[in-house]
Image 1 (spheres, rainbow, N blue to C red):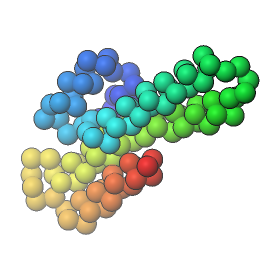
Image 2 (image 1 turned 90 degrees about the vertical axis):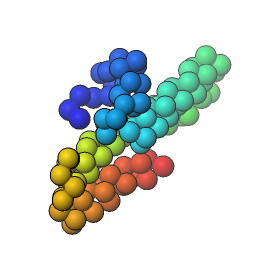
Image 3 (image 1 turned 135 degrees about the vertical axis):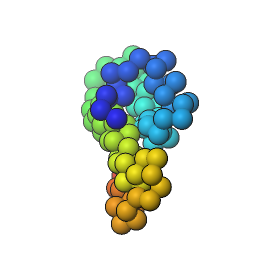
Length: 112
């Protein structure tokens, strides 16, 4: 997947997640949802407090950046799994499939 999830319209991303396309999948969708959840916390901090919550806002902003990047990395990593499996050819190289699968699992695990 070459297009960033963050440049897609929300309705287009929702359609892609619900489609038979391999990406974006659950990890990317969870990262997008998580980024919006963190953004809502940041909004609450910005509305309810002046400078008292500045350290929390800084932590939250850094976390949003990490989660945002993770969404695209997850989609790319899973696309590599599909590619290693050979797409429509189920006779993919087992070692390459295993390596790609481990790499794909590391993205959401690292974020968690």
